[in-house]
Length: 110
Length: 114
Image (cartoon, rainbow over the protein chains, first blue to last red):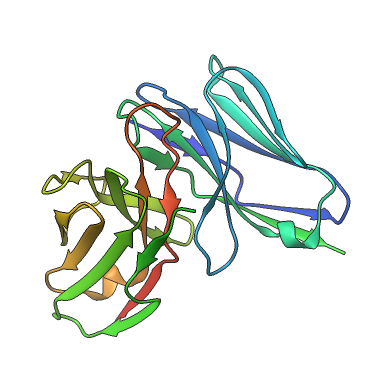
C-alpha cells in the first residue's frame, strides 16, 4: 500500500525557522510535491523534488532522500502569513496521480 | 495563469438528493481530478480523468460518479447524497506529457448534506 506521514501541527514564532518532515512508502516514485493551503482556500504549489538534494526557492526550501523515503520543507524567516496547512504529496506509479499526506498545520505566533 | 473554477463555494442538500458539482479549467489540461478533504484525513482521490469520456476510480469512488464530455469540464455526481458525504470537495487539473505533473486546484465546494 501507500503511506505518507507528516506531523499534525507545528508552532513557531515570527522570524524563526520551521522544518516539516514527510516520510513516504509508495509503489513507484515520480516526484514529491509540497503544497500550501490557507484556511478555506485551495492548495497552491510550493515545490517539487524528483532527485535527491535540496531545492531552494526564496524563504522556502525542500529536500528529498529517495533511498530513505524522506522529504522536508524548510520555512525560513517565518511571517504571520505563513500560518497555513502544508501538504506533502507523492507521485507514485501512475504519473500525474498524487497521493497526499494529511497535512501539517503551521501556526506562527508573534 | 491556470484557472480552475467550481460551480459553487457552498452547497446544502438533503439526504437522497442527486447532487452535481461542476469543475471547469481554462488551460487545455488533459488530466482532471476530484478530491474530498476531511479533517485529519487530508485529500483523498475520488475519481480522475486523463481524457475526454475517460474516467478512472480513485481511492474512494463509492457513492460517486463522474462525467467528462468536454476537455475543460469534469463533473462529480452524488447519485443519492448521504450525510457522510458532507465534506470539502476540490477539483484539480494538470497537463500531461513531460513535466512534473503539478496539479492546479479550484477553490473548493463545501457541501453539507442534511
